[in-house]
Length: 426
Image 1 (tube, rainbow, N blue to C red):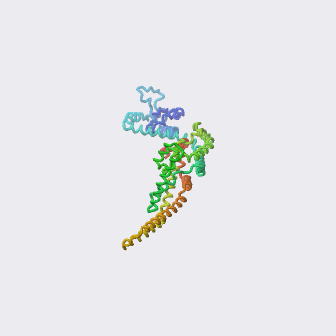
Image 2 (cartoon, rainbow, N blue to C red):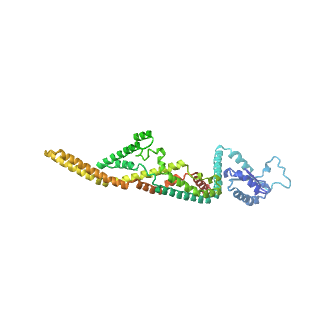
Image 3 (tube, rainbow, N blue to C red):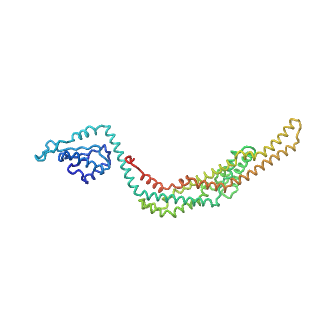
């Protein structure tokens, strides 16, 4: 209930004093009372004073009050004590209506609950407006800083990918076994059987070769017993961190590129009212282990994708028919002669079967040898690594994985808050 004096209702100190309290209430919960209305002319009060005062309040408080009463409180005293020359100028008085609203309307339980909900919404809208005002002050500057951070991360990422592309000191391990494993699942026929046998030889051979490396003998025995580590793409000698070794130079260059340009961006963030601690380079970079894990996961995923794509390209039906045809031709030819002489009652010499088996294996090994040459060309580790890097350069998930620093997240939140709009603006 906001009480004003009708003789001077637009006092700024009075309006400003009530403003912090008014902002916590919805318009339906506000009652504006203009007292001493009996001191003013009835016509002037209705046509000039009340409309002008109501408009003044709406501008000062940025919200209208739904209830407005003009009263003469002194008239309701037991002994008003009016002077003979200063009696009320008119009988217009809304005191009874004000009393009825306070006594009969505000005490209703459902009305109070409804008012509390609307007051809470009004408070929420006020907080959102204040947040919007504060964040809008630096929105343009933060938007420019966000663009610089994205450009910095883009350049650093490109440097890391170029480093990974040019680094041949740590070749990608385990690609041939994984590639032959995919091929063995898709090929059929005699050549497909050879691919499956060759895959087992590669896995077992990796375990045998690891056994004779100059390292811990217990690890060598464990590697022999679990010889599928190589096939799964992990070097047994590297342990759990082996998959990160190939990424270490690239990640090192990424961090170095970030450090070179972060000082200037940190100063701009301080000018945008961020904590001075943002000047520290560690505030922009993601956690080291998370960075390695994210980059490694995408890198391994890229390698696996290229392996699957290469195996699909090498497993097309016409390729399988082409490599299996010579073997099937020899097999059908030898089988036709054998079946024909069997039904004619002729016994073929044992040398014929030996010759047929040798010819069959000759064609089978020749087809598989030519197929290995094709696999070596189309699925070499260097080529798969290059294709994986090309796919990573255009993968938006890579930048999201590397850009997990808290500063970028905070800038995004501040910019989102600066774009908030209240329901009244909508």
